Length: 411
Image 1 (cartoon, rainbow, N blue to C red):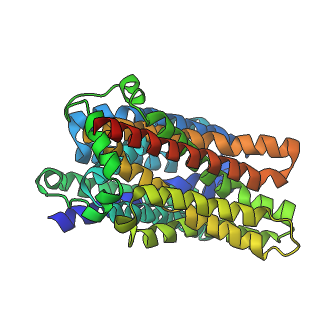
Image 2 (cartoon, one colour; image 1 turned 180 degrees about the vertical axis):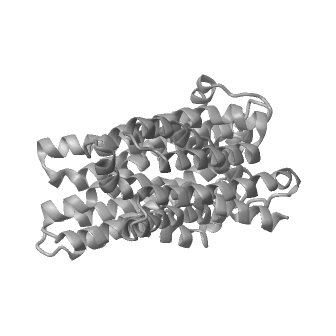
Image 3 (cartoon, rainbow, N blue to C red; image 1 turned 135 degrees about the horizontal axis):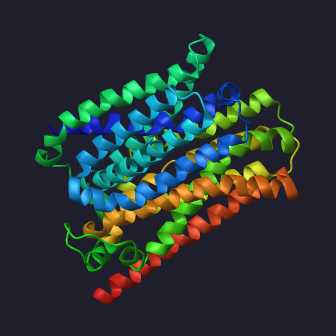
């Protein structure tokens, strides 16, 4: 039963990634069919992001009441319904209405699944599961490309993904008894030893019973929560900015031809996916704290390589790949360390807020860079990334200091 539930969770993480790239992949054709400007994509993604943030903040209350399995099944079902709605939409207004359940389903399932895995599985599974998210995010553009190239049209791509999500919903509903019966795998002792001070401190921070609701204000008052939220904001800001603007930077500031720039920009996401798969093999031995520290340091090295003013573009292209590999373990490690840092009674509430902070970063950082680059120039790109790296690393180290001081006081 353990292997069966784990397999279902892996498939669920693929489903998390499937809808994430569909709007971007299909919008060049969608906006023309719907008769709206290209810029309307921003309005659509903002609606999805806002609803995702709201459902992330509500996930703690929902999960405590209905359980992680039921919340996951319902959220995937909600996303499936929204995707089917997209496939039947003939106006932009209707598309915006379907974007509401689209975002609501994404936020709740993300927080519920991440907390369940952080509580019950070793660090290697958290990295591998997020690698499977990257797999899903990489598959959906190919489905959209196939639908467009074969004249099936963009609605058929949404219908295909919606049907996949519907099948997964049925599988999740059938698996609900497993979520309570399966004895999860405990984290390896080596992984715990790397976080021993955080684990000790978390016992003091876990002031709530597992069945007691933790409000937003109660959660943010826990020592260390504000730094971890800022670290998450910084990481997701740099990731989203790199995915959106790296190709434009390579073309406009470094003279790379458009085809090569597009290929290497896609390799940033591939680097994250491959990096998470590789990180899973040593995550238990290294521990979450060092994975976050080394990850940010590697992204910083990649940003320096991108920024170096030398004639050859090879270093900048390699720097983009290295930044992707460095980004890989940061997100999973922050999530996986949350119960150790703040206690199991608080983890669902805090992970929900972390998800909200992540979506705020990924929503606001790219357009902010767009505005700054229009004013100052595209050369700002590696510096902008470096600033987010500095913020993320400073906040994660601040969290470590807070937990060490807390552990010393308890001793």
